[in-house]
Length: 599
DNA sequence: CTAGGGTTAG
Image (cartoon, rainbow, N blue to C red):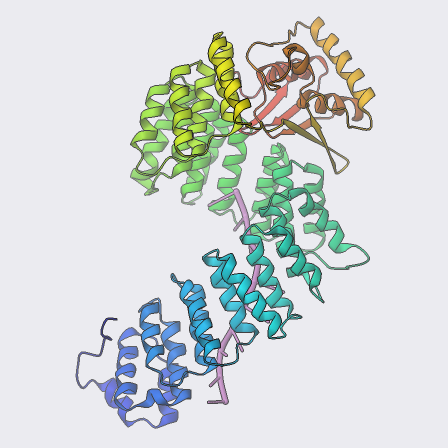
């Protein structure tokens, strides 16, 4: 351990003050200490006069040291702590709390163990701080140990403590354990429900998160959602494309007087955008009095993903006129706008501007947009160069973006290299091989295609089933390829047949060459005609009045044929069709798509 | 004798 810093000037006026003050005077001097220099002088003084032995004084001083730790360091606080001869539980709690918020949260855990070994009483607070530490270092093992202690200590009905514990399990991806803690809680307040919803959101239970919004309000629980609940549920709506549910939450927000909260408005803007309802997003955005960088970024990204690249760039300029400084996420939106609309030169310009004029260091998302931009424009080699020249480690997503571009431009040799990189990262997924097979298939390279297929079979690599959802009256309906599980399946298939024949008259021809989702299918044409998005669309046509927009969310990329299908349908049936796939939105209107073939 | 806990915008 390094030597403690001490005051350099031997006799300052402050030290005189210290020496002449009574013990109550000293306490108030300590409490009012706000500068590092005074802190060091008090420290020296307490050491010289053995005042560290006095628990009240040492506690007060520890409080100040911890409070001023941004000026000194957590290590300094610890050094002082170690000088206290007989630290009490109070001292420990103070120090453990400090650690839980510091850059070395794990130390809090060791100190907690130390506290117990000394036989001091660990109260609920101490345990609470330690769990915080465990969350920070995502130590499930540590958390479980503390959990056991909590039960032994008889703190099993402390809601606040148990809520923290739920958050721990949630952060460690232990959904069931978090639920169990929730179930065993004697009393659950709104925050407990919020943590449960947050847990669903972060553990692939997004649909359950929506359900909880209603369950918590039901007769049995009678728990009022608050602003945080709304924030969480809006995120769930956005990721599920649940527009109607989102509108309900919007109404709830208005009815409960949260309408003016900027964080909620920003969330609404994002939710509406991500549900493909740009006009509603803009409505909320326009009504906001204080638009901050988050609001603008949400609007810019919203415009971008919905295919309004030029408008997104205009919004970016407008934002600067209003004196709001863009940050990293603003640029993610702007670059995304460029990549979705094929604005290669603009994209390069913004990428350059970003760091030079706004000091925003490009992150993996920015690079990802640039790779997408270059890749889609056919500049595959520069895109590859860009990835290899990054000063950050390429993540699987960025390689996958390039792989997508390889598919568009049918570059099989680069695609193979990219898959090689994914394998190197041990991140290759079924979808990557499917993409590779798509490339071989459209190039007519049947040998390689069979090779990959065989490889996948041998390794038993499971493909992610394509799944499309459509929300109707607040309920999400799910479809997979050739789905026969829906109650109205007969009507749906009849409708799909009718749509197909109508579209054929209008000149739509099924494209069976470029896609093969169903690996085992002998009859590709057949599998194609019952893709999940087509079933969802047919269901939409069937169950909504003419003219109603049809909104579908798909977990994978939409295939070329389904894209053509939706495009034709939007004209023939005069329906707006909005499909959100894994990478972007497709707005189909009057026989056209917002992506203008650039996709 | 002293202080102190949970969820949370793009």
